[in-house]
Length: 118
Image 1 (tube, one colour):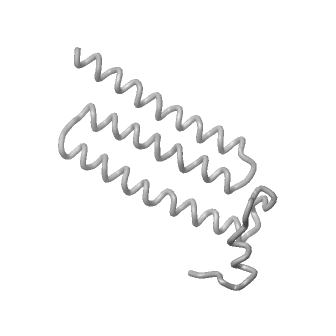
Image 2 (cartoon, rainbow, N blue to C red):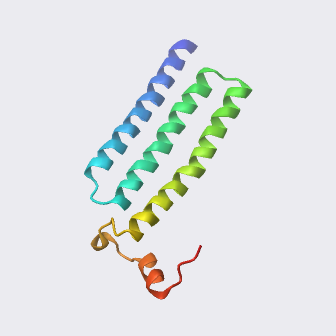
């Protein structure tokens, strides 16, 4: 009975990760500008990674596997938003976005005032 439950958990987690990958791909193709596409690329990627590492941790439940899975998710969850933020800054600085899609352009106001920051 436990093999059946393990297989069902694996199927659910892997299918949910695959759906997240599909959502990211569709978002990258369908969204109109860089800033929207970054959101589509980072959010599903993290959730898909969580699903895959959870599946690995559930199927091979040892202290080392769980620790490594948690470390992978933690570091990816820290670095993906920072990388997306830097890409968004560069897209804004090089005018590779659609300003009409923004509700408030706080970075544009800061650039005009000279409050660029570090």
